[in-house]
Image (tube, rainbow, N blue to C red; front, side, top):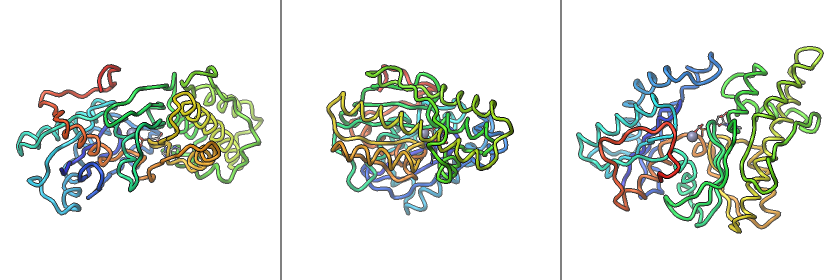
Length: 336
Ligand code: KG4
Ligand code: ZN
């Protein structure tokens, strides 16, 4: 079954063609970074307008790179939520139109299920059950994943998402946008032990996260400095900040493995591109005999291939969406 996956939940217009939920025939992502950079964050209205411009060329490129026409597509999967309403609407309306005109089955997909399913696009995938840590710009969620479409939320952030904390700290330090990638690079040149930022663990058994405290302590640290931070100061600040975030993410993920007794861990979402997180989690897990699966960076950030994978498994079960499907800015707890 060949599925076209469409993703427009935030600031990336993406389309991909995937065969049988595993084999990527094409994966096209048009980033809006340049557009939002001068504002230091995503401007929802601008994002929707840009999606409107990009959705047709991006989908055409995905089909052409896969050497397929719409007549050879068996299913269309589109991100239904969570995300920015205006952005989601562009992808969903577009997917509905081609589904209607070409009579191709349509399915709405949860963006976060997309992230945790990106691992199936890798050669060896991951066996069920596994624990998944989805760390993105909007979410920091831990899941127990029993099967395709069968997952349970174990913990989540109570305030900022991990990616949001990266972006806010970068913005405060005038480092540019998007912050995660910039901090990742700059932190390599800093001393992570120079400034120790607090780690919020909530309670020993909790699998929830909190990142607003670290962000605030970075701001307080800078405000208390005698002079504005130099580039050298900034390197140490972001290295200390990143170390704290990675510590929390790693400890909670390993705690989830311990609590569930499932010793397979999948890391997903944009923050899973972070080189320090990738190496620390891999090393810590190895010491404990836990297998870690992390998709390559291109499949960690938003893309259409992960949406196509989820869509494939849903369509295979006959779970089509109707043309009156609506977008969901927040995904309801009871909806799978
Ligand atoms: O999954 P994603 O592409 O979009 C959302 O669903 O939010 O994640 C974007 C987030 C941003 O906050 C970005 O700063 C962060 O992922 N990010 C990183 C890195 N690359 C992207 N954070 C830390 N280190 C990175 N290398
Ligand atoms: Zn995402």
